[in-house]
Amino acid sequence: MTVLDALDGLDPTWAAAAAAVLLIVVPPAWAVTRHVVTLVHEAGHALVALLTGRRLNGIRLHTDTSGLTVSSGKPRGAGMIATAAAGYLAPAALGLVSVVLVEHDRTAWALYAGIATLALMLVFIRNWFGLLVVLLSGAAVSLLVWRAPDRVQDFAALTFAWFLLVAAPRTAFDLWGHRRRARTRTTDADVLARLTVLPAAVWNGLFIVLTGGALAGAVWLVG
Image (cartoon, rainbow, N blue to C red):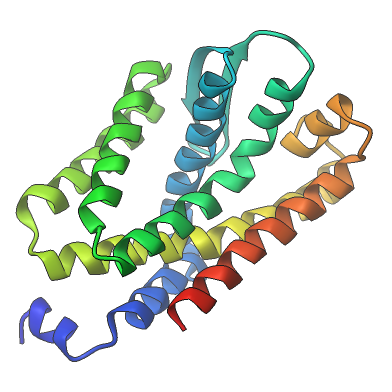
């Protein structure tokens, strides 16, 4: 039985969702795939920084799955707030948009958007490990675009979308635990607390609610 034969016998949406969940709940898999979430997280910071008129200076992805996006501009204001908030929301937003595109037979749009995003990242990556992550991700997406049959493209795009949709609230919950354990004041939630009147815990809660809402919206859309 070929891969295509196996896909013919499954509901592609829920099979992709199940595959995505495995990539998150199996610890060895999550240790690798977590880097993809960080890539999208930092891409969210970078894209919103550019859209709000800030100067993007560089992006770093680290081996411990953390990342850093540096931009310059006004130290306060709506642009800085939007840039700081975009990281944890970016995976959920991209996952939801990808589900909508695939469900409306626009898988190619989702894949080409991924290639465009990775090309942008490539320009601003400032460390070797980050460069490796971007290049491997770009090679995988390019292989899908130019070599894989349509059904495989659809399944891969759906798996990636569900992966981001499930991973987004998980990382938001992980942030909550990390802040309690480490008592750190350098997370995105803490940055937002310094920029606004809302405390970091409220921002962390908003990340959980909004990413969970995106996941629920995707389930409703396909259900």
